[in-house]
Amino acid sequence: MITMDSTSLGGHLLCAVPQLLDPNFRRSVVLLLEHNEEGALGLVLNNPLPNTVADVARGLDLSWEGDEDETVRLGGPVEPMRGWILHDQPDWDPTAEEVLPGVWLTTSLEPVTRAGHRAVGGDHSRVLFLLGYAGWAGSQLEGEIAAGSWLPVPIDTSDGPARYGVSPRWVLEQEPEDMWTSALRALGVDPGRLARAKLGSDAIQ
Image 1 (cartoon, rainbow, N blue to C red):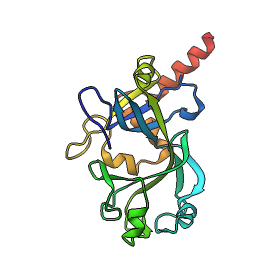
Image 2 (image 1 turned 90 degrees about the vertical axis):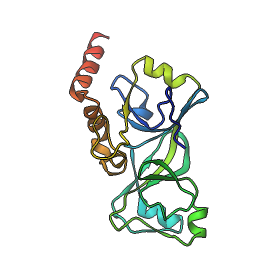
Image 3 (image 1 turned 120 degrees about the vertical axis):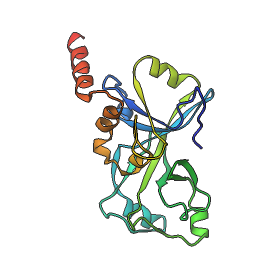
Image 4 (image 1 turned 180 degrees about the vertical axis):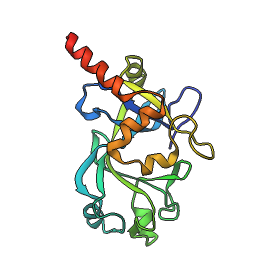
């Protein structure tokens, strides 16, 4: 699904700056899945919900074998009942799309249940359950980036440790509470300076 060309930010993260006042995106880190002239679509990675993945999995007739305390994340304000699963188990869903090296996206459970793969998680695998997504109309995201609301962070898909930006594994492994500061530091940006700049602009107002 990720679209990547010379003008696309598909395959990047977006980090919201503190000045972005929309409560849906406060200090959000978004994985952009699509970005083209028609618009953009992404998943907020660092907004945990109270619901546990175990509870949601039971409601979907799946068996969650991961951490019992793992929570679902709000992927964005659009269609909040629509589910997305990012994972590193290519054999679990025969129709999953590899959106980053080693990271697959499942958007429907029908092929999973048809294949008899009801168990998910466990065996040191990484799985993120998300509800909803973030969407932008054509040119809307470009305007927000030009206004300074978002900082694009590259995802380094080369072999070995990420040289600039973050690695694909970061998307699955980084704890949500640390994602915003970690992504900014990977870009060479001091999160503290951004926060102080926000406080300074508030004082001026």
